[in-house]
Length: 301
Ligand code: NCD
Image 1 (cartoon, helix red, strand yellow):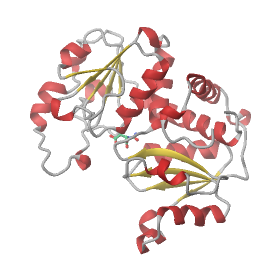
Image 2 (cartoon, rainbow, N blue to C red; image 1 turned 120 degrees about the vertical axis):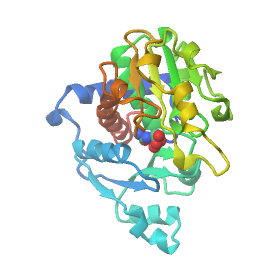
Image 3 (cartoon, rainbow, N blue to C red; image 1 turned 90 degrees about the vertical axis):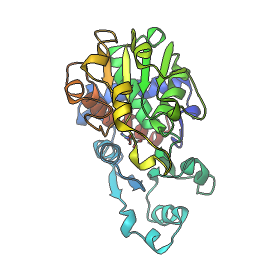
């Protein structure tokens, strides 16, 4: 694996390797981790991020790498330099691994062909297209509690139209044979293309017998002008609350990629309650990103 650009580049065995490697990192301590002291990773984030950027940084540091956080607003791109030139400049200084978050759909895949073969690009979210490391850490979290994917009902609820998280998760559920994936949203937020699973606008129907519910953030910054959303109406129909979560199985896992709009798509008493796996997702994010970096640098796949 030279780059991680999208889930569809992976085979089922590749995913199994990444899950096993992440579990290895979770169960062992720093002295057992492979070290890459001559490697530097650059975080290139053109959109805001807390958990993704910092967990890549933590992951790299656990593996003995150096980390450079590029301050895009103060970089030469503010003087008009192209992204490819920024990467080439950093590559000339010896940086080979780039974690890229960009607002443009397909950006990481589009630039790799123009870049030298010795560098690695990891997609940390591109527009409304994909967020592969998030889907992989979500799968790691799910399989820890509910390993039989072929017997699972997973529900994804919220802004499917703008969600790169939902897109990568659909690809991954298809690849790994999740038996029932249900995507719930008001019709105005139905995705343009359904990758895997089935769509409904009924939360009660979707949550019936659900094993996992993944709540998505209402992405105000992606609502294009003219796209009206009545937040109160959304809450009444689609919020995950104590009342609506009771429609799912008693041991349902409540997940959210973060950041959470508390009291909008998800109530605090559910987000902080016993069924919530949200902080476990964050924790697993570091281990999965270690697995991704290690797999790339050790040329295992
Ligand atoms: C997501 C993202 O940025 O795509 N968050 C994350 O990376 N953990 C989801 C979101 O912003 O709603």
